[in-house]
Image (cartoon, rainbow, N blue to C red):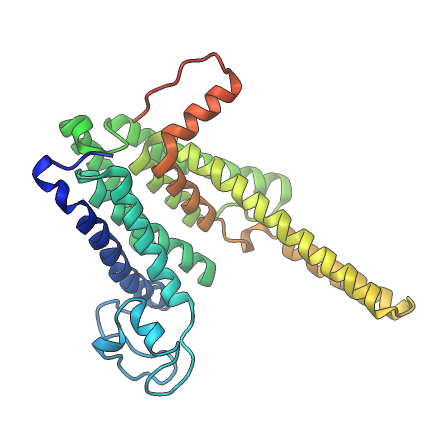
Amino acid sequence: MTPLPKDLQVLHGFFMIMSFVLGTTLGSFANVCICRWPAGLSIVKPRSRCPKCMNEIQWFDNIPLVSWVLLRAKCRNCDQPISVIYPTVELITGLLFLAAYWRFGYSPATLVYMALCAAMVIITFQDLADWTIPDQITLPGIPLGLVLSLAGMYWGQASGLRVLDVFDSMGGIALGAGILFALDRITVLLLKKPGMGMGDMKLLAMIGAFLGWKGALGALMLGSVIGSFIGVSVLLYYRKRDEATVTASGEPETDDTKKKEDDKKDSDDNITLEGHYLPFGPYLAVGGLLYLFFGPELINWYIASLSPSAPALVIQ
């Protein structure tokens, strides 16, 4: 963390609060992007509306987090429930902005990585809801990360940026897109079905542009570990639930029952094997954020676990 100048240290708590407030405000805007981009709608006009009664939401009903609580999660006009997703996006974005200030302090990197955090939130929730990763973020994000690496070369360590070399950023873009493209081709060749989507490739390329080749590789590894853990946990949960249901029913197995179970098993297998139906973008986004905040510590921990006698590395 880059410390505040002495004359501004008294404002440290204020900056922390404002970071959270700014995050929740942009989280509210992120909700607009998540809802409208998949439908091809403008994120500027019209003003925010209730998706059920289509009435405009007044400013006093659109205060991040607060309005949802005061309205008891219901629209003022139609009294229909407001999804908990909206305050969740706002809260997560606010906490990530606070974490960005806590991690990078009084440096240009703080604003840069606040914006990156907001982008990752939008990508995560849109991919979960619509199975798409917005080009509106990844396509401009790749060259922007490259430009910021040039700024890092100019400002050096004072910038607080993770990438201080344009070639590191270029390597991250190439590795991020290349490794997922290779995995997609291997999947098509061996399993005869689509593998990684183009959205995932562009996302990892963007992560590489901002965090370098180590960031792209780290995001992929961390995302894969998290995704595997969650995927296996979900499969085990449903398997145990189905076994408990069969045991509780106590029905004797007949040909019709066996056929229904086989059909259900085939259906479950199709869902499980059709990997392109399981969005990988959220795991890449989480992996990228973990590397953003804890990358050097994670690398040093990994190296130390391989060779306890190896000296710790200082990694930007």
